[in-house]
Image (cartoon, rainbow, N blue to C red; front, side, top):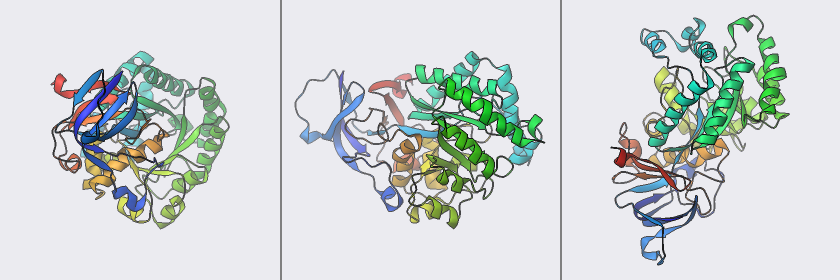
Length: 418
């Protein structure tokens, strides 16, 4: 099926010679075409250009994008979308003054979700997660990484990963699965954390690999969670099964997680609220993508990662939603785009690159998604009537997406639904 999107007010992120990601000062560059067209053949972008240069041709479908912007669909490279229940009661505790760590110590947080995973069937987890996927697609997300990590037993982790596998098969979105058995230490192992690490290495990882359930392996390497030494043991065990490393790092303190991620060629290191000169130097010239999660800092009232300092140093940055029930209960990447500008002081161009081009790299799908490039998948957003791309982070809170197109097919039409 051949589709023409015509009369596009602005076509964003056109890329004739694709780069893996953009870094430093290049993040402030955003290639655009005004009064443009884009052609989709089945699931791929086959051509684009100025309307004045469009050749006569027959199309099976034409979409008139007058007064609209067209851009790559958002990539969200860090989420925990499969979870058993929301945790709004803990949010009330937070309002009353308890910290994230205090809530965790009294059995809340990750451990709360882990207890409830046992009670939920795979079907229940699947249905609730699919609803969340449909929700984020309505806000323009076309690709998402989903982590396990609320099981904390072999059975629980496999249950979550099997649900993610079903979502991969049934959802039109591009989905990557991440095994995060090292998300927290279960209460029964508090006096012998090493024994839980042994369980992850000797039982969980082989079981996950046997069923081919994960693309990545992750560890929460931070104060009060897993040490650098434990993280290295887990990543080395995962490498034997070709599980690509990603790390939760430096959310709560200077943990050594960033250095460990770079040492083990992690695809990304995520959170990074505590990032200093030493961490920036280690990341420089590495292939590891610094991925910032402003939603967690916003919701938990944490410090914000030093995004501007990182860009000035020449680093790339990606941003993700961290969609989860405890510390970032939203998968709205339009809000993340706005937080990038409001809290990190990113230019609109930098924020847009962070949730498209660089976020695709942080998911390992930069050859398929993230830019408007001939031959890439047609995962696209058509906006509502808005004046320009600078409006995207500025006008926060409203859904500015009219249509979400995944692999050439419109899966969300917000105007029709309205």
